[in-house]
Image (cartoon, rainbow, N blue to C red; front, side):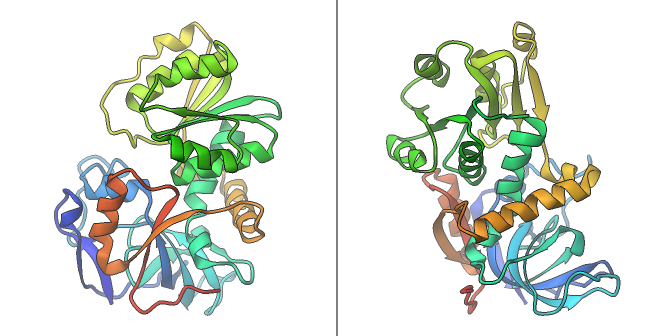
Length: 336
């Protein structure tokens, strides 16, 4: 089969498109014929040599098939799997291997799609919507009437968080890199939009809702953005850290939290699945259903064929995308 791989870490140009061995179906897993691959933030970080999910000292295999979230059709089922069948239309994530024509995944991280669900929409749900839901509610304890600040809202998690928070009755503040993006974010439920390229987001938040007015911050950026978010918090406000997409190395100083008795919480969706499997699996299943029904939306910014994975990564790193960027294996028809 064909896959996008790399042999050494670096820029988008290290990705190659070549023949690789077929994935092996484990007794507790499935093999999926891939229809759509969702490019996730960790994909570009891993390719760049920042695979923080690896145990210390462990190297990536060569060649390495990047990617951990895709949707498609089950083609093989392991002997121990009882809840999935050949022909099921599913979305799944696995530690790696998604940038390929076929991928092996555990049944425990595979979700059957409601009838008629669009593969493009489904492929982008588990990590983005699962993470956003977990950050807002399980860890962030967001309640109706509270105020949430969501950074980098034009990305997958940000767009998911806006919609989920708005549906829960929260006041949503958003940050993005352009006024055009902010105008679109208001269509999804943002009450206030802040262009972080033209002003200090902390000053803009104060101007919009007053000082110390945010109950919860959802931060996928890290670094300086994470540190400055503390200044926006109410007494006993919370920050949920879900990523380091800003890629700056400013260390977090917790002293600023002391003046607010604030809380900084780290979140990884795979960690929730590891320790609270039934609840976390159910959260993602609910999000899949809500997207399938049209209650929540996935915005596809651009589609690339799998052989152009390097171009897709380059496009993402230009930071102009609004919504998700996806890959489609050659010859696939991802229609419902």
